[in-house]
Amino acid sequence: MLDGHFRIVIFMAIRLIVAQVLRDELASRGIRPLTVKESEEIAARIFERITDLELELAARDLIGSRGVDKPS
Image 1 (tube, rainbow, N blue to C red):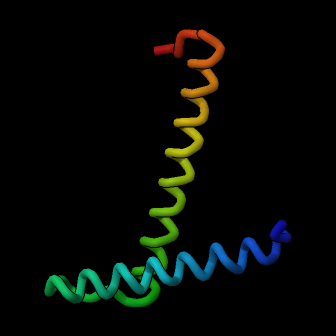
Image 2 (tube, one colour):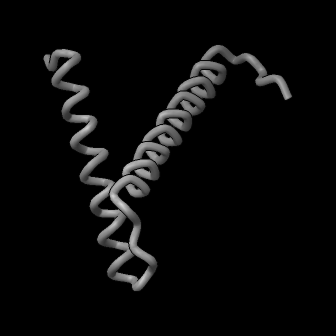
């Protein structure tokens, strides 16, 4: 089992890799290059949105498994 510190290090490394891939992909398409800071901020936001989506899907599954109608 990974300890908390190691997980954080891995997560940060993955975010940096995603930021680099984003910069490379934009550059390969002739789009204005991002600064390192911009790409890291975008990568962080992507992971925040993924986390939000995972939480929303988990909540829907929980609501669905209980047979409770979701409030509108």
